[in-house]
Image (cartoon, rainbow, N blue to C red; front, side, top):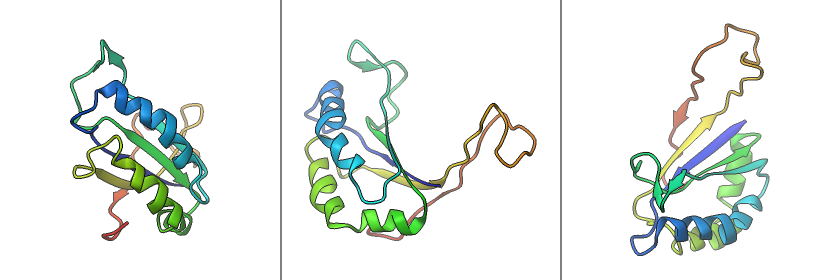
Length: 135
């Protein structure tokens, strides 16, 4: 499983709630419809009175998109739908000049044990890497 994690702060003229509302609403349908995507997860920070419960981490959105392979991920990211729909819509709610990205290989623990039957770790690590420029 390949997981692409994207991080971005909201646009300066938007409240946290307005940014998350656009992301949860209009943008969610775009992410979920990318070619070959297996899962699209939106991680929303917990808010208290319109502010993040914990100190601001430097970003407002953190989606995770899962694919079966790097080839499937590349097909989605290189698709016209990604550029035309997802990238074009990002300017409506995030600061597109300050984004982060990592590509990970997810290791899911089940019942507290790693799927390979090895020793049960207390922390699961994922390998992170950068895709070539333009991805």
